[in-house]
Image (cartoon, rainbow, N blue to C red):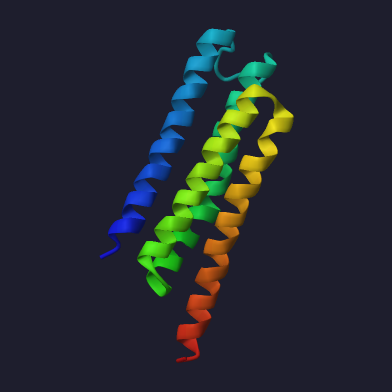
Length: 130
């Protein structure tokens, strides 16, 4: 059973849901009617946090689960937690100003790369029977 990875996945989905709610709230606050995605820079930053999180999910989630399956449930979840912390940092920084998004982006990117690299290592290691 992959209890820790399941928790990390649920937290990541919860964070994504939160960013979606933030976009809906920002539409009202800044008067940006759907389907528009531009018009107010403050809205656009909130929208980009949600969109960028969605863009990273297809990289993060399969890597998380493959890492858990081939290497370690606990370490996958820990790296997943780092990814979520990076996304939160990204949200906070980008919400203030676009140039402040870099640190959070870097943290989540390193975590995702670690998950992907670990998954590749785990698969190759098992294929070679080592």
